[in-house]
Image 1 (cartoon, rainbow, N blue to C red):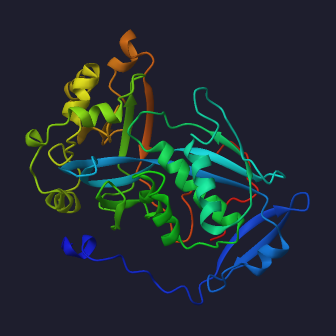
Image 2: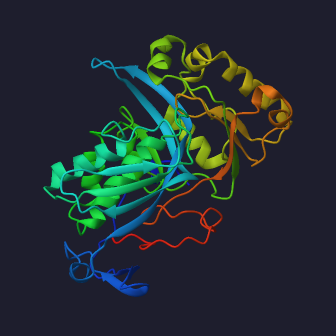
Image 3: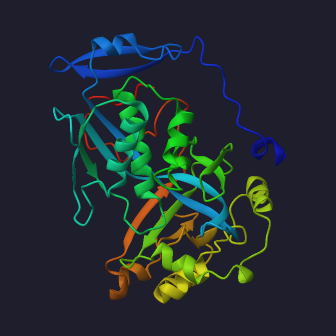
Length: 365
């Protein structure tokens, strides 16, 4: 496939006219009512009759298959060029309409996560109300699986998921494009999650260009994150642009589309400064590489750290099980993931086999 076919120019959007999307809403005890949504209508007429009161959504994280830092801007931020891709590791967020007309209530299954407006979920709900003038407030439960300080964009994904959820409860007052544009006010990584799951991102990360997935979905990976996190601000502070790799990021994208993922294309310019901040992270990557013996197609750090990704196998090297130094590392297998247009990301079946049903298993666009 020629490179220009999938990275140049905006992604075409097929017309919505005539398309009908269905989802099941549990109401009236456990009776199922089928809602048919016509995207030509700004507000689903049936949704006016059957109130959406509960919603459970999957909130996946991402990896940076490559991450080039290309420039330091006058505003103090850095320009980047990166292949972002959603993966199958994620949180589950449950939303319920609150009787309160003044405050959201957030709970979670882990300690240390802020539950007030410092949390990006609450920031996203506040932003949606500001942009649309709606007055829905929510009870939210965050079932957290993605570690924090991991370079996986877990918080950004939570924010994007909350914007999507708020829009469903309001009858889809905003378009996906509007949600994506608004989300940049929350954080640079948030707009990416309104892509279809694979995107070439530039600027601070907020300029998102959808691309057809450049790698097969069935390629497995393992994520290895030590307890220590890297401060993003500290990593960028130590970044020396004159020592970064000078390869053209568009060439990296083209090579991945033609030849797949390999060690030489998984370049992350933030690795050297992150390894200065956390020398043990450099040792971890080196040991994974040394122990892999061809097990992985590539081993690299995602984002600003501190997750090391091994592409090509779901299994971590044996030493992380055998040595006390690594007894507290976070381990997870994952695959690449995308979403269908007008639907949010679906929880992989292996993760959703707990038997719990949600009141709305598929969002109403």
